[in-house]
Image 1 (cartoon, rainbow, N blue to C red):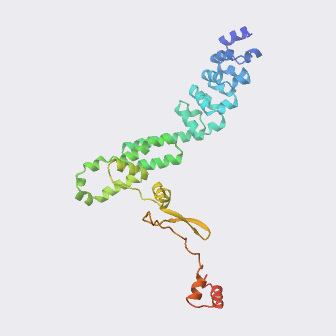
Image 2 (image 1 turned 120 degrees about the vertical axis):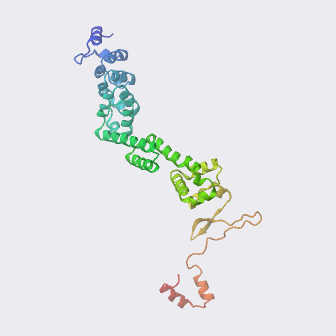
Image 3 (image 1 turned 45 degrees about the vertical axis):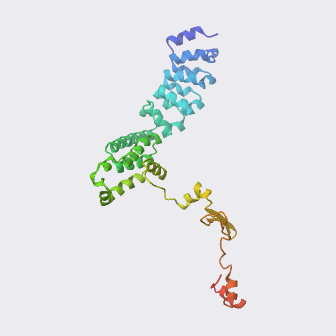
Length: 312
């Protein structure tokens, strides 16, 4: 049975000088009521209640400092710790040290209302610089300054800003590079003669676009606009391309005891496809045969030439 006089005292004037009977400290329903009145009552709770998310969150909602009495596991849980910080900024003071050192957790805490005065001083500076970079991004986007946006993105990446912060400026780069309506409306580019006369301007726009996106994105945009295009493959691209594999454009041969891939014979003919029989001779493989049969050199002469490094 609960100590009713203690329970009544807690409901009217809770204070740290009250210590609950052992039976109360082990009663979840009692502590849910007690911490709703004074979150600091969590200090009297049994260990299992200090590890109870509902009890701890109720205590933190009433008093953020109550998180100090929560179990180490709860204070190290990023999801639960963030919920506590949402309820009270003061909870930030009592979360696990590794979370206080984590810039991404700190950012989430700040975005959910945590006072920056309570975060790690080093990360407070990091947050302030993030705000400066975000403002600079908005300014360069508003000015449609393509080069400026790229520079800010690079600085933001170096500063460790999360991906969601970079989505808008990256999209702006693509939009500015692709959506060049002023070029279509410019009379200088109304016909082919004008476009040839001002090709430097067009090439600059194309370079800005293609350098800000991937080859696959460029190809997709061109195909959508019915513009003939195709990527320039590297050797690696060629070797990995499924079309080249399906057409059997490469075959394996042996060279000096190891297997290598070489271009196969083309075009492919059904009756006489052809194949590469050898990867080629090794260095000096036919020296004796040629020098003896064609030049008539003796064994002594060959030995002398080899000792002088003339032949392999």
